[in-house]
Image (cartoon, one colour):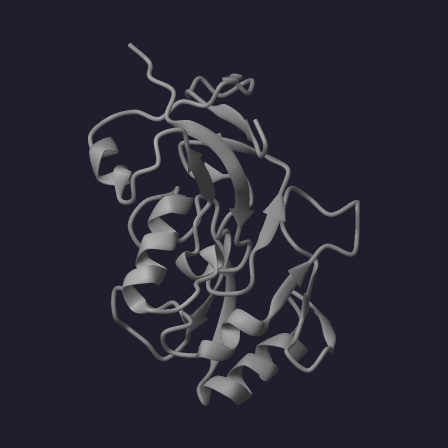
Length: 194
């Protein structure tokens, strides 16, 4: 039995891991998260650990880099350029961008394209606006939902912070499910404002 819990208020995609995200009006959701989400990441060349990715925890400046799409003929949902915190626009796969990240990080990096993305825990992150507001209240400060790096922000019908805990082990469905040929996997198209 399906129970309506709320409405999708916002959808975010983060094309390059730990860089700025983009707000979407609709997105295609499959087994590997939203199309184009976290499909690019910078790898720390000298790191031999199981988690060699350069993230904002190692270089907070990454959050200030903004992926952009300058070429409509580009393949898929990947950005073609990155706007640096200084306002310069550089090709994603260019040496100039890698050198800029290396300069800020202090060690060699290499951009990697990953077919199924790089995720810390799961390929999709959902949070309710009530939860963000309650965390802000408890912390004594206003918070921007983007600080949580969610893919889907839900405005609940029944106001209750941390309602997401009740969803663990369940299934969330969007109002509109559409299989994407030729993949046999279950997928959905989600839209903000539904």
